[in-house]
Length: 338
Image (cartoon, rainbow, N blue to C red; front, side):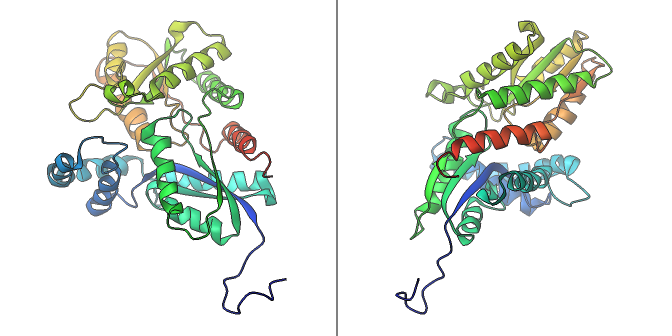
């Protein structure tokens, strides 16, 4: 069939469909240099920090990357998977790939990539191309859209495509926060998480990653999609409005961010003697922002303020309900391809 090709022509493999699961990323280790490389890449992204690089880069490469890698490295060390000698995000992401591949069978080839760190988005695309994929679904695993997450994940993939002579056909996974599969999975996870506790929480907090208020004013839909996520889940559970609340975490720098702030809310609830359960619906996989910032530091802040009943409900990760949801949204976007 290929007798017309020159003998040194690259092998043309049977065409396949690929799925590339995209996540934020993680450092390769917790030491200073590994953390500095990772933070430099992350905080140099113009989607994340919208300050003019001529002003921002001297600050970032100077004082910030002289001090922050040690602090961030110590935080990562608190949650590092000692058995796998790897970050929880990468460990769980690998399991998601294996389980989704088993569910899709020979209908598609599944791989994963990180916006920052390893394996890179470029490595993920190359893996799928080497497997013969001529059609690829880019699947940023962010239920709610933000330019700082889904937007930059797609940017990275498109930058890779610009370097390719033979580009695959591309689809991108849209926000899936209001799909029936996601709302049901998140609500089930919350209900099961609460049922396992030895106390009844007065309030369950849905803590979302924050962003500067200026990003919202510039038109980013993330804030509204977070509130809608929590409303849809609350309605699914049949809970009263005061039972499930929204907060925003991970603020950085002196500017005003989306409110209410998670840390201030936890301290106020601890002081008031409330019983709290908390989860982070913007994350599909447990990572530094969930395991260290919420499960550990949030708990410490709560107890230091006088609180006594606190529980963290994990992300959907590679649980059965999480994989059911992921398979559903991926298959929906692959219609006509598989």
